[in-house]
Image (cartoon, rainbow, N blue to C red; front, side, top):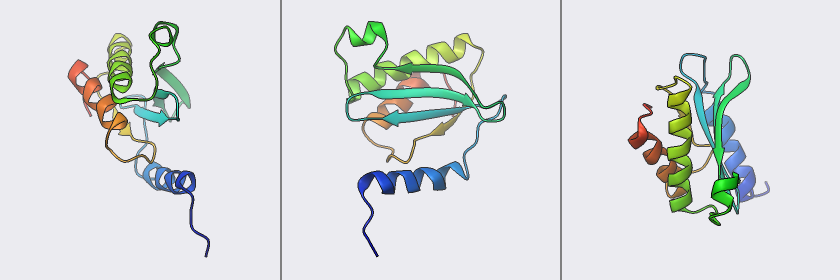
Length: 120
């Protein structure tokens, strides 16, 4: 048996998580992806297979601030995604942590989204 790499283990956890978590048009899924340099968040309707709202540190106004994948940036992205979701008339969502542990950047993004008004 070969040992799994960190990436393979995260992908395996994400697949296991996605068997239980699915977004619908009434309660879409907030998906978080964290790379080495950036953090991304999307609100997805899995039934229609389309992205409803997205936010990341790659956006023009956030890139000019020099934000990367850290806790402060995750909080800003969480607030942005929540504001856009509320503007799109989405209040209730399901949280998909993407196989990452609910800690650090992922937790900061979720907490900021909750404080701004999303329910999950």
